Image 1: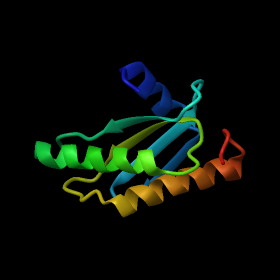
Image 2: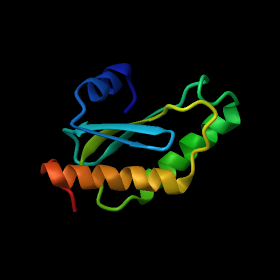
Image 3: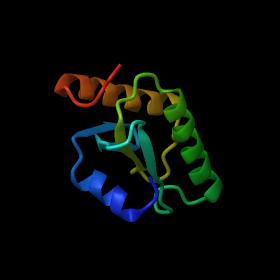
Image 4: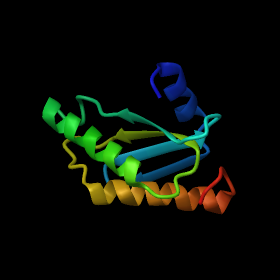
Length: 110
């Protein structure tokens, strides 16, 4: 996801929301055939650019390796100031998304 309109649409009309540690996730069914990821990592939460870039890298890597993600537009936001973003927390967040989508019968979850 690249533009503000797409981000706003997901955040406003999310069908699934999840929280794990410092991360907040909002997701909504997508018209595309593959899941798409959007990241929000602000300076208020992680002051140094290296920390923001590392957080984004960890989230993107976990997204790539997440099995069975439904075809959703997903926005992940770092919402806690100075928080450490670990691969384990991100993996749990994507697992929570898959579980919530299965429970609600949304999307094509594998």
